[in-house]
Length: 248
Ligand SMILES: [Zn+2]
Image 1 (cartoon, rainbow, N blue to C red):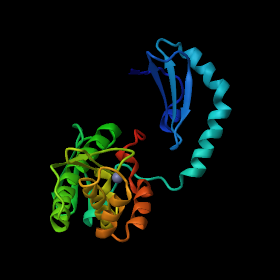
Image 2: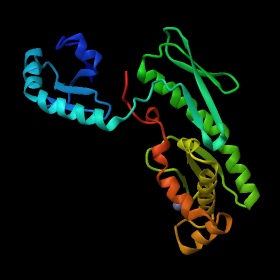
Image 3: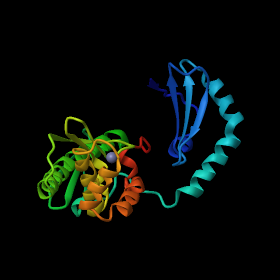
């Protein structure tokens, strides 16, 4: 995949978030309007600029309608890079200071509650990568000891803990006793995180969701039903930069 530099439209279009991508796999021209309103046109390799212009002319009404819908749904824009990152799970709040520079984006703690983002803050992809690396590391430092404490306190044992960044699961427990925790748990309330840990630790004794399993969970976490529902809804609390590829 390569990004085309085809001079297709005005600077105004580019500023409004239009882009063209040449794809060796694409067999025909397609256009996609993201929920942020950004428009991406994917074209087969070596498509002539003229063909792209014609394609866009034909689809402009549809594109404009989709962008209008996106604008209406979007609400206030979320700033990126995020000026602040709140991690309720460990009751932390980090301010992100833009340190400037043109090198590859890097993120490091530079004081209590202060993160310094150095490098090109306008390079969306590398900034997101830096944020994700930091988040995973922070999850390792914060969640692993919490799990260990919880296990000790309640009399469970497990082999090891892995931190993952997953879109669909909050945690899992393997037959070998490896517990995986999603780094996005950091965006949840401590009570919810504790419930998830009790859930996974209970799997070290019951590798299923049988009644005995839920009894085990309930014994240590009577409020588990409410917390489980809250966790199911917890994806809403995960900022876009954790998974999305949107933005500059
Ligand atoms: Zn389970």
